[in-house]
Amino acid sequence: MPKTLKEMRILASETAEEARPEDIDYVIAERLALTPSEYELKQDLVLTDDQVKQISRDMKKLAKGVSPQYILGYAWFLGYKLLVDRGVLIPRFETEELVEWALDNLRDGDTVLDLGTGSGCITVALAKEAEAKGIKDLHFYASDIKDKPLLISEENFLTYGLNVTTRKANVLLGLGKFDLIISNPPYIKPSEKGVMDKNVLANEPEEALFGGEDGLDFYRKFAKEVRDHLNSGGRFFMEFGFSEEAELKALFAKELPDFEVEFRKDMAGKPRMLFGKWTK
Image 1: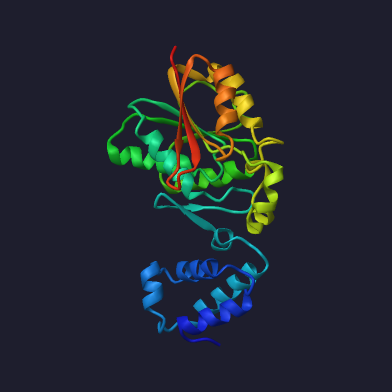
Image 2 (image 1 turned 45 degrees about the vertical axis):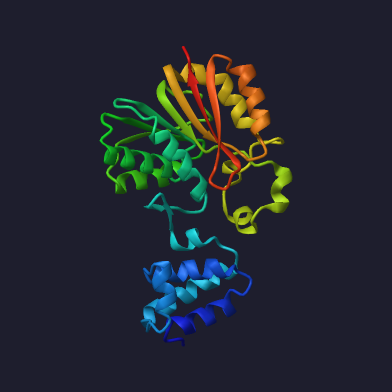
């Protein structure tokens, strides 16, 4: 049985030999509550028997292709620790940029909808960051098409002491009116499966990933419904696939001519986010 972190890493790489080294290191570091620098500097750290047993179980799951965040039962998003489980999309770093953009446009008294909430990561981050900035009297709603994400998101809202109204809904059908809508919707094309991480395909919910043949099914429904669900001067923020900018510009120009629409690139320089404002 390994006694040090260094020995544990060697055993782990043998147990989960097809797993990415960074996934192995991430799971071990999280189990030991070590920062990346501590993890590299404390290779002689002596592990307890319980730690060795836990990490050994983790590595067996990793060897079977289970995502690291599902093994741990949580993911990090903009510095917030969030419960995740199978059936819920694992939060993406790119979506943090969307939250930062929306935060800059949040006003006192806004009613906010997190459309397709998943783990609730967007609402948690937006609500807590708004609180830190002194933005007041916000009213949060979160919706999803499936029950499992709503249950998980409610746990996360409870953990962070947030008062959020949750609703089961397909896009905007049956929901009320809002000042701001934010969403990371399904936008991947089935034709892109071949270039996707196999762990994502094996673990994460298809309905949160794939957006129809051209990836735009959600956006078409949203564009047709959004006027009935925004207050005058309302705004929306959405993520999209980097190859879909031209199609979305054409779609919104046709369906939402009375909206100002802006597109932005992510930190990697890829088209990733859009903002719309009703000029009514």
